[in-house]
Image (tube, rainbow, N blue to C red):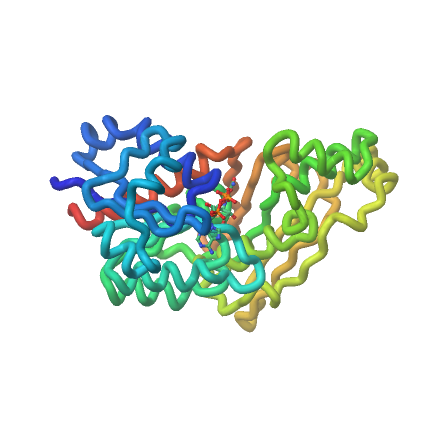
Length: 340
Ligand SMILES: NC(=O)c1ccc[n+]([C@@H]2O[C@H](COP(=O)([O-])OP(=O)(O)OC[C@H]3O[C@@H](n4cnc5c(N)ncnc54)[C@H](OP(=O)(O)O)[C@@H]3O)[C@@H](O)[C@H]2O)c1
C-alpha cells in the first residue's frame, strides 16, 4: 500500500503530541495494519501553510523552524491540501467557543477536497455536526472527532461500532477536570485562585482557564454528545450554564464534610415530547451516585439507554498522549474502512 499523506492544521500541544505518537506507533501500524504514512503538510498562524508531497521529516518536531524556511508557503487551505496531496487532515486549531470558526470552514474545505477530516476541536462538532457529517457522507469521506469531547474516551465509536440499535435517552457526567481540581483544592482549605494555580501546575488548566471555570467547555461537550448521539438539534447557547466561580469556599468545605461534595455536573435528557433538557452547573453529589467516582483529573460519563439503565465510562487522568491517541484511532478507523 502506498504511504497515506497526512496534514496537520494546528501545531501546538496536541498537534505535536500526535506527531510524537505517530512516530512511536509507525512500526506497529506497518506490521499490524499494513499502513504506511508520511506527513506532507503542516500549518498554523505563525508557520503559514507548509507542504511537501514527498514528506516532511517531523519525527523531531523541533525541526519545524528549519522546515519553515525550506518549504514553500501556500496561500490558503485549499491550495495547501492540494500541494500536500493530502488524504487525511488533523485539525487541532484553538477553540472558538462562541462560533466554532474558522475550524468549521477548514473542515468543510478539507471534505469538499476529498480529504478525511479528524478534529480534536469541540467547536466544529458543537456548532456544525449535521452539516459536516452530511458533507462527509456525500463525499464518501470521514469526519471523526473522538478527542473533541472527552479526550480519547471512546464514546462516539462505542455507539457507532458496538451498540447498534440502542437508543440514548440521557447522560450525565463530569466533563471538566480543571473545575474538579479547583473544587477539591477549596475543600482542603485553598482559595479559588489557589485552586486555579494548582490546576495550572498539573498542566490541566489553560493559562486562561475562563472557559473551564464558567462552564463553557462542559457545555460544548454536552452539545456535541447530544447532537451526535441523540440527534438533538441544539446549540451551546441553548444549554443552561452555571460555572463554579460563585461557589463559597465555606459552603464547599461543609458540603464535603457532609459527604455530599460539589462537582460541576453535566446533564442532558430528552423530554417525553422529544425536547432536549440540558444543563451544566455545580451540584452536590452523594457517595452512592456514579458521578462521585470521578475525582481530580478524571472524566466520566454515565449513559442511560432504552436497553440498559446505566453504562458508565471513566477516563483516569487522560493527558496529551490520550488526546493524540483519540486522533490516531480516528485515523485508523477512517483508512481501515477504505481498505475493507
Ligand atoms: N490540550 C489538550 O489537552 C486538549 C484536549 C482535547 C482537545 N483539545 C483541543 O485541541 C485543540 C488544540 O489544542 P492545543 O492544546 O494543541 O492548543 P495550542 O497549543 O494553543 O495550539 C493551537 C494551534 O492552532 C494554531 N491555530 C490557532 N488558530 C489558528 C487559525 N485560525 N488558523 C491556523 N492555525 C491556528 C496555533 O497556531 P499559532 O501557534 O501559530 O498561533 C497552534 O499551532 C483545541 O481546539 C483544544 O480545545 C485540547
